[in-house]
Structures are given as C-alpha cells and as structure tokens.
Image 1 (tube, rainbow, N blue to C red):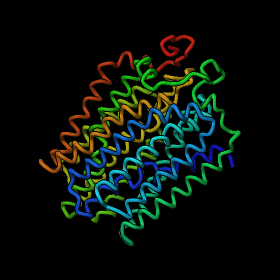
Image 2: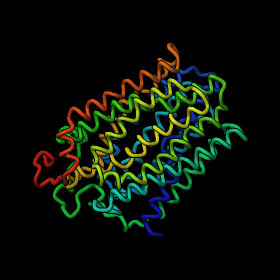
Image 3: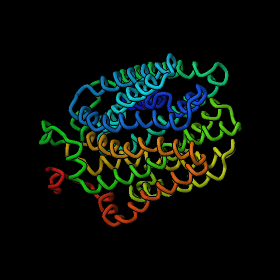
Length: 410
C-alpha cells in the first residue's frame, strides 16, 4: 500500500482512540450519578497527566527509529485504559483510567507528526498533514455517529466495543506503513543535515530558545483554557435541561463540529498560502469568544449547530496550522517533535484546568455563566497574538534555518 494512504487510514481510525471515549465521558459519568464538579476534576487529572507526558513523548519520537511501534503500543494501551471504564465507575478507577489514557495517548500526536514529516518531508508536510487531518476529522464524524447510534440502540457498552474495534484498526493501519518509507532524519527535522543527530533534545530548551514558539504555546494555552471544557459542558447542559438524549445528543455535538473541521482542514493549506500562518491562527482565536457567547444564549438542542460550527472552524484550522508552523519554526534543529510535544504540553496546561474551571462554574453558577467566563478567558489568546503581531508575522512568514539562527542551535 502507498504509505501516504496507510497514513491517512491511520489518522482516520486513531481519531476514536486518541482521547478514549472523549466527550462521551461526561454524559456517561453523569448517567452514573456523578456531579459536574467531580466530572471536571477527573478530566483535569487526565489533562495534567497528558501535559506532563507530551514533551518526553516528543523526545522519544525524535530519538527512536521505531515510530510505528510507538503508535502501536500507545494505541493499544489507550484503548485498554478506556475499556476499564466499562468495568468500574468508582472515582479512583475512573481517575486512573483517565491518567493512563492521557499518558499513552500523549505519544500519538508527536508520533503522527513525525511519521508525516518522515514520509512527506518538509516540502510536502503542510499538504499531507492537511490530508491527514481531513481523514482524522472524518474518523471522528464516523466514530461519533456510530457511537451515538449504538449508545442509543444498545446502551453505553456498545460505545466501548466500538472504541476497541477502532483500536484494532489503528494498529493494522500502522503496520501497513512500510518501514523503509520513513526517513527518520527528516522525521525529526534534520533534512539532509546530520549535525544534531546525536544530541539529546530538551523540550524546555527548545521552547525557550525560540521566542515565536514560546508565544505560540502561551497563546494556545489560554485558548484551550477557555475551549477544552465547552464541548462536554454543552452536552451536559442540554441533557440536564432534558432537551436531548445523552448519547445521541453528545454524538450530534461531535458530528457537527467534525464535519466543519473536515472542510476547515481541507482548506487550511490553501488559506495558509493566502494569508499566512499568523492570519489563520488569528481566525481560530476570534471564533472562541463568540462560541462562548452563543453557547450561553442558546442552551437548546438546535444550539449545537452554531456552537459546534464555531468549534469546527477554530479546531479544524489549528489542527493543520499549528503543527505545520512548528515544523517551519524548528526545521533544521533535529528537534521538531520535541517542539511539537512542548507546544502540546503548554497548551495542555490550559486544557487540563479547563474542565475543573468549567465544572465548578457550572455547578455553582449555572452553565450559562460557565460558558460566558470560558469565552472571556479565551480573549487572552487573541490579545497576546495581536500584541506581538509584528514579530510573529515575521517569524511565521520566513523559512527558519539553523545555520542562520544561532539561537536554534543553542
């Protein structure tokens, strides 16, 4: 099989594996009698674990020549950790499952980016990663639609069975990628150079030595502080108001967002060529405050369309633009996947705190207030992106080269 097709198949199936049962976790635990605050707290534990694991995972991907093995092991362990929830609903078992899912799943993001860079090389990365994200969001649509229907027809147990099936297909797709199709030097951003091939990468060193990367990570952290809790909270809000079936409505929220993400990811590469990385990421930061306002005003079954369409625009464009920009900023350093992991770590700080913040706000002040506060928090990313706009536009528009930028070689 053409390795690019196998890579796209992998991205399709891994969509239902990477976050465990994802947004279904909130309504699943709610059905077991959990309160919003407790649900938010346990989700935050997983977010913190993911944050701590992502940078070491990026270093592992940069250093290993067994990237397919990393994906196989991570996908298998993530699936098993999710299936534990089917057996036990106790607080500590759910917490352990979320932590284990987060730690193993943390390796999948850098590994997929590394495989793409190793197969498509730098010059083909933007286009191929865009195709990967189209497949990934399509996988989310199919997975969510099937989960919603199976959950409605057979109960939540069927959602866990489907997660297991997608886990097996993820492993098969990975093994269909030929080992010799991956250039491991290109996969870590070395290209034709081998000067840094034996250096040990440090995530914080990479982040601190590249100011545009640090600003990108900080802006994404603020963005995800406001964004991460909105999807599970919106599903819980509508279900709590008795305006939707838990499984079916949660599936609908995912399907609407992911359909928009398919289109956004498809157009992302063309939009990057037209208005640049800075402009594309600016659009994503504009969408979230508006999403919080709409979510607060329309807690109803039909409100899923505008709320999740705005999520689709932001997340769909970011899913292509952010990894591609990291490759652009760190090309030639041999530390691209450490950089990917470090950006995910910093943005994970915001994402980890978001469910706890949103859950406490929803429990004590109501869902509408939670959405308004989360939307207001996210304006910080917009302010940061505009405040340093001139420097960021310059960094986003040029081809970074380790030979001409001593700070990256430090």
